[in-house]
Length: 221
Length: 258
Image 1 (cartoon, rainbow over the protein chains, first blue to last red):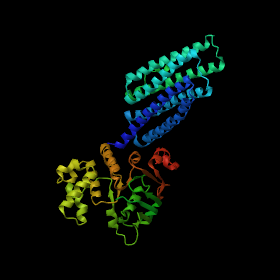
Image 2: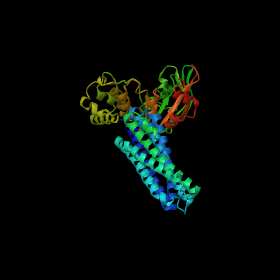
Image 3: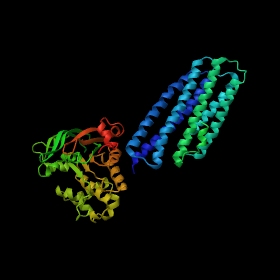
């Protein structure tokens, strides 16, 4: 019963999964652009974000239509309310990928990241890509065990973020202020985008259980 | 076959009282159009002007034009009974002919039109009951009285009876207000199927129902008791329920008025 309604609901879910696929690939590509000083990759990330924004607006419209016309209740209601939150988180993840790509573009043809920090940024980029992709899988599967794993991945990124700052502040920094600002900002972008991915996993937990996650798990954000 | 309805400056009277004033709207083929509004706003009266049912009330009359594609339904020489055959109607309370079997209820209109061939009737009855999504529930007991069905089934029987004579338009005047929520959803799903073949206009007090089933929604209202009802706004259902153009529409659908 209510076939078209259920199709529309499924469509919202599909839109979120597609968004998470796009932003996961944007984070990965932005990291490549950054570490390889690859201008084409940086431009590609910036252009591709338009698609993410389009999906975001489309999802917003669909969710509003469903709320206005179908009076969803129970799981259906939570699915739409959380979809609105998750799409906004995913859209932000995409924006951070764009920020990272823009740093790469701004310094091109120079590389942004000093050689002693390449490994840390690479690791952050890989962890951030992983967490963004996992967020997509959590949306698709509603797997709460996987949702919990995102918190651990986020801790890894937080540690890497802290270690970046330690390097910047240990008194031996000799790459100048500009590079220091770039590195501080990049660290911040990865750290923030991971938080948005974690927030997606909280939303899925709420969607499945109807209960908010342990409030302490929000505190770290 | 589905047809377009165009109303131009329709006014309907009960004696000297003008119930609706200046209603002009277009209803597209193969769509569901919902008419909503507070009690006494004239939405049911307007619905009944579409198949010339308004005028059967003593003293009632209609001014203005209602076109079904290129045919003026109020033109000179137009047979009102023929209009009602082309434009079927389903009422608020299921009203199967109480002494008739399920089969005879559906076949009644065809028999009235002079069809006697039992093979033709059998086919039409099955087709109509299938069309109303009732066939599987009643095929084993077609000879049983229609009045023995549940309320939701009776209403679908009435829809089957209405579509048996192959109308072009189906008018529904609060078809679900006497039904439980599950039967209501069954009728709503049915409307989505039926619009593939018919133009459907539904009057409903249930705004959520209008939001769920219709492609376009028209909002009727009246300034004050004793004033005629008017069409305030008609637009896509998406627009009406998410961002109506008229403040009066917004006030009504958000429950601030009416």
